[in-house]
Image (cartoon, rainbow, N blue to C red; front, side, top):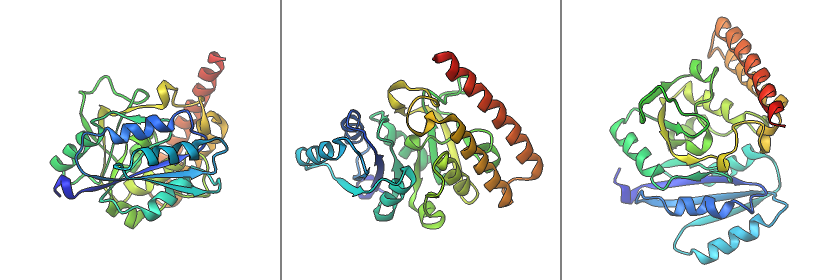
Length: 266
């Protein structure tokens, strides 16, 4: 598909992001990929002035298509789903309201997709997930039996073909923690997913991947969310009993490690 005819939907769930949302939107506006964009900002019942800030941004950037959707607070999955439900893009990208894309993020990802037509979903690295022992730009195929041990797909790094949404559907709104892990397991069961060892985002202004802010701050509930994802994979015959037991053991060790690390930071 020619870039000029390409439409990319960018889905940004927003909750109390008044301090970061302008930088987030600017990081989309500055993308070097020449194509059409629809930027869907879903205000998930923010209690600060995030909504007013985005409205002002829209009025001052009329050449940049930003659509603000206002909804009662329901959690990040409901916000992403609200964006997915009205998205029209050939490619769909997610961006959290405290992350920022590098300016060439989409351009680099589009080149990878063009050179590897079999890739349906592409996630990339960030400061919290980069493999120093692998070449920069190395591609790894990621399947369900990889995702039960490590979530390779931080949502703000992910771009995916529309066909995925049309078949897999929406995020599970009943799962409040580690919900993206469930979604990507469901996708990996049906589509070709790859991870590229290439940093493409500033992740939450340098925050840790856990125990820092937002939902990830609740370590116990995040742990339960990971376990729920493992139960889902096993109950749907996506992994066998040996894989399930081993993944449970690994997750328990990771949970204990997170508790120690967060405790030392206090």
